[in-house]
Amino acid sequence: MWLSLLGMAAKTAGSIYENKQKTKKAMSDAALMHAEKMARGDIEYSGKALETQKGDWKDEFVLLVLSSPLFLLGYSVFAEDEDISKKLDLYFEKLDGMPWWITGLWISVVAAIYGIKATDIIKTNGSKK
Image (cartoon, rainbow, N blue to C red):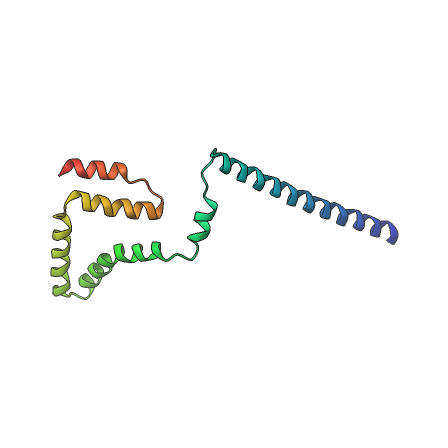
């Protein structure tokens, strides 16, 4: 009885090991095929770009810059601070008065960071002014 259980366990372990080896080979083949497609230009090279962005704080910085007026607005409302409220009103007036191309450029930069296509937004805002 023990021998048959031991034999079955060995067979299962061998099967698991064999499947892991097949998986490693399949992953290696897939990586090779992907690299060949990138070299031919069939698909866009994105691996290194993603690796370089792992430790990048650019996205968080842009998010903080864009969020700071909202934080100040919330503070001015809840703290009933009229000075900050007036300064925020002035900030948004100045922002609204900026040329459309500066706004479009800023939208494009933010969109590029977050991977959004902003060309339609820029065209729409540019035709309004």
